Structures are given as C-alpha cells and as structure tokens.
Image: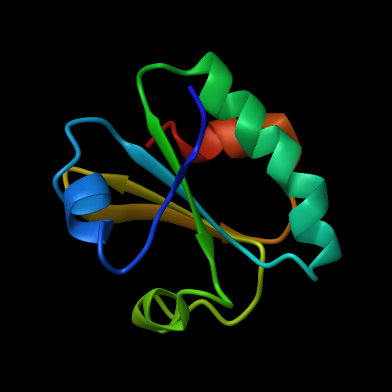
Length: 103
C-alpha cells in the first residue's frame, strides 16, 4: 500500500481514528536525510498491510509539526489506538523503522 498524505484536514480520521497502528513520517523536500528515509518508509508501507503509513510535509503542514513538537526532520511517530506510543528523529535503517512499530 502507498503512504497517504496526512494534512490537518484528514489527521483525525486517518490517524486518531485508525483501526490500525499508524507510522507518520514528518519530512520536507529540501531535507537530505528525509530523502534517504523516504524509500524505506515506502517499502514498509508496501510490505506491512497491518499498519497505515502517512507522510506529513512540514512545509505544507506546519500546524501538525508544531502540535507534536517536531523540531528536526525526519521525525517518525507511531500511533496506536489514537495515542502516540513511539517516536524517533533522524534517518534510520529499515530494521530501525520496523523496531519502532514493536511497542
């Protein structure tokens, strides 16, 4: 499955009310580490049908970035049952991204 674009308009429905755990990737087009992490996040989205993967462009959605205190990118957040359960900052190998989901 492809990652979905998360905005302020669809955040509640796609993240807080999701029946599946949600992995959110906060990124920007000018961010080098974000460009390294993006294909890994895409792979996870394609391989794991048990989770939902979303991407938040911080330049287009500054309110969402501020709401979760995202100061550095890339930042990955994991939500389960509408609650933030894990987060990390910086590019990670695929194994590191998958490990975030195991909480």
